[in-house]
Length: 427
Image 1 (cartoon, helix red, strand yellow):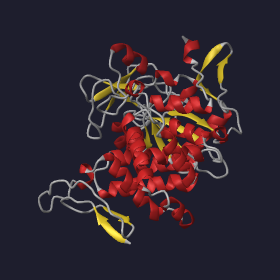
Image 2: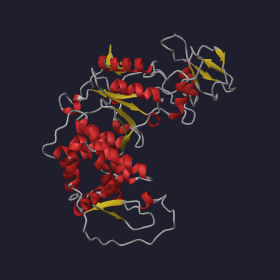
Image 3: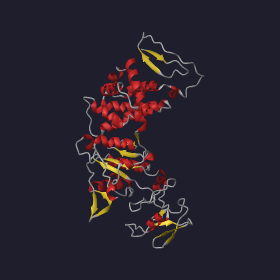
Image 4: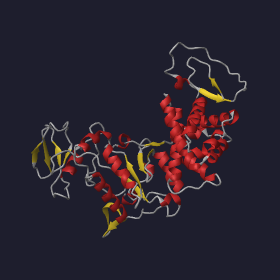
């Protein structure tokens, strides 16, 4: 088989063609010698998708490589690359879009969360190709595509993309609805790397797999979490400082409320830092000296009465449920029943025995108490999340996704799950 190189300053992109095939191609103007650093960024998006599909071939299981290679006709590649380029630029094609497409294809069978993991690999393939800046980016995109095809099969991949070629994405809706799903990192979740992996191990427990969702912790808190600073308990409603990562009361009302709040473990009241920046006072008028060399001390910071250190962000559990929900083998709102009132009054933590067990398992895995209360979805709606807020979704197969508000709404709608929104009743 002969080898054909696309004309240009580098000749790095190679496309094998059959001997005797005659091909004409417009040649770009030659560039300066050694100008190969931007070969990927200079490639048209359609060409990038072709190149990634080519790199995918050797990464596939041996028994499906021949089937995948058979689709490498110029017309098929042109159609698929064009469709993928439109999807990549639309911002509307999210994980739910891909799941919908797969479910509509006959003969494709998935188990539980498998379809969502496969769809995530597909979205990573699209995003990485779209944003590629180097050859290694294309290699990573090819790895995600090979993972996707290994799960769904070559026929399903071809059907998904070629059927999509006949569809037109509503770009006006795309502009209004920004759906973001990507692989999560510890930094993006606002967690220490060790804690991130510990939570993932709980989700992956083969005897009791779970899908576990967390809201993002202020990344500025992570350095203090690593040093063992105490987490904010549910009794303290004050937020962490955006730039400090330390829980800080910002007005006299908040300071007064914090100082009269009792830590249920020690029976002592919380302190807040005084204006002198060296001491802290609680509601009983007790004053303590602070170790000002341990952290940047600011007025209003909330001080734990036992450790004498400031409170920092906790790990805010958003939801937890059985992966069999995704397979349709359990009700969509499985595990979403909580105790809300006792003796005619709202309880201070909306939870249930199953969620409490998950919280216990998470804290045991982390090695300290960092998950401080029941799931947020019992209290509030996804609709009330900020548009740019990211939720980390830990899956039993070892994947962790980041979803923004629109993606999470789509995900819950797809599986038929809802939040309880008990805050509405409290108001």
